[in-house]
Length: 363
Image (cartoon, rainbow, N blue to C red; front, side, top):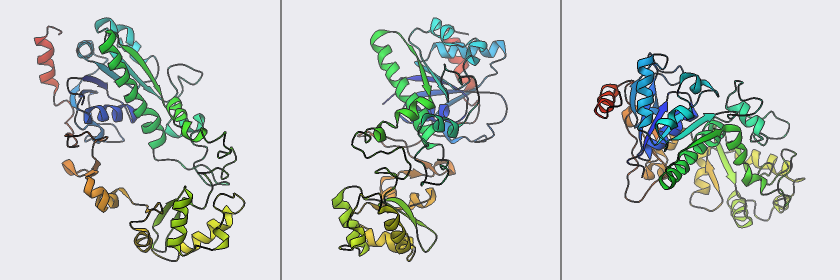
C-alpha cells in the first residue's frame, strides 16, 4: 500500500521503531539510522522492530555522518524521531533545517509527554504516561493497585499507532498541498484519546469513576477466571442474549443468583460463584464447553500457544520468520499476503545508500 513512500527513522526505543516497522509492513521504504556499536540493550542486535527496513550506521555527532543523514532526510517523505524535545534541533536536524531542504517532509516526533507542557523535558515510561492520561485508572479490580499493562496501551496504542496515523495524514496532505508538517505524537495524548470509547458510556450511567462499578469494569461477566490447571479463561458476554447463552453453557440458566446481569450490588457474589465453578475444571474443559458458541468466552493463551490456536493458525497471524516468533503484518489488504520483511544487520545498506546520494549529487 505504501510502495514509493520513503521514511527515515532515527534509531530509538519502543514506539518510534514500532511505528517504523508498521510503515515498513505496509510497504514503505523505511531506512533506520542506527548509531555505531551494538544494538540497544532491550532488543539486542537482531531487533524485530527493524524488520523490513534498510539500515545505515551514522554517528550524528560526526560532521560527515550528519551531512549524510541530512541528505537522506532531504529525499524522504517522512521522518521518525523519538528524542526529548530539542535534541534533534541541537544536532542540526530539527524540523526547520530539514524542511528547508525538503518542504514536503512530514516530521514525526514521538515522545511520552509531548513537545510542550511542564513535563516535556522530564523522563518517563509507558506506565507513567498512561497513569497521567487517565488510561490506567480501570486496569485492576477495586481495592488493588492498577496493573502494569505490557506496553500495549501506552507505547504501542497511544504512541506508535497515533504516530503512524499522523504520518499517513501528513503524507496525504503533502501530496495535495506540497507542504509537510510536524506531527507531535505524545503517548499522554494518544492514550487519553483512546479513552473516548469508555467515556462515551458516562452519560448513560455505565461508567463510574469508582473502580469496579462500571459496565466493563466490575461485572462477573467481564473478567478472567483461574482454572484448575493453572490456566485462565476470559468471559465478556455483554449483550443479554450472549449472557443467556453463557449461563446455559455453564448450567446456570434459571439460577436466581444470576437472574440480574447488571446489578453492581450482586456482582461480588456472582463473581465468587463463577470463580469457584471455573476453578473446578481445566482450561481445556471450559474451552470445549464453550466451543462454537456465542457465549463470548475464550481461553487466555500465551503467544506461543496462540500461534497454534486453530483460528490463529488458519489466519497465519503468527509466524516464525528468521527463527523469531513474530506477528504477521496487520491490517490485511485484498490480494496482498501479509509477510514480515527480514531484519537487516546494522549498517547493511550503508554503502548502497551512500552511492545513491552521490548519484543524486547530495553528498
